[in-house]
Image (cartoon, rainbow, N blue to C red; front, side, top):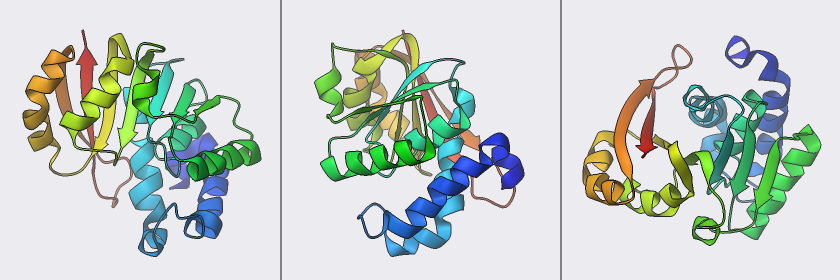
Length: 199
């Protein structure tokens, strides 16, 4: 695990510690998630990192406890991460983590994704466990720049979701959607990443 996170190990470990101490208390993660914090949440979130271009502006929609937004901000300090989260208590949590870890590449938006439509676009938009892809596309694709991508962390039914969302995505300007199976750390379950490119 340490080798996988490399230089990001210390801040990632700090974030994990904060989640272990306060996550359940603040209603961010359930008690059953704590033993799987590293494998299911932190490693899973970091799996999106290779799909994001260098020095890119990235919006993470529905950041919640910080997956994948805060993890990406830690492992990819070259990125400018915009965390978009409508719930006030989650924004307070994200703000606490940003301050405590000292992340200077994070901008918080206390808003729903749709509130940023026509105001801002980004090189990439990420999302994890937010909604099925057809619904997610309506919220996120308008935030993606021309030539940019939606990078969604999905479950095992990702290919089915892509098929179901095909027409919605085409209408929104998505030219191709690819499903990638990633195994960042040996012995950890695979992560499914859907990358949808906007024309």
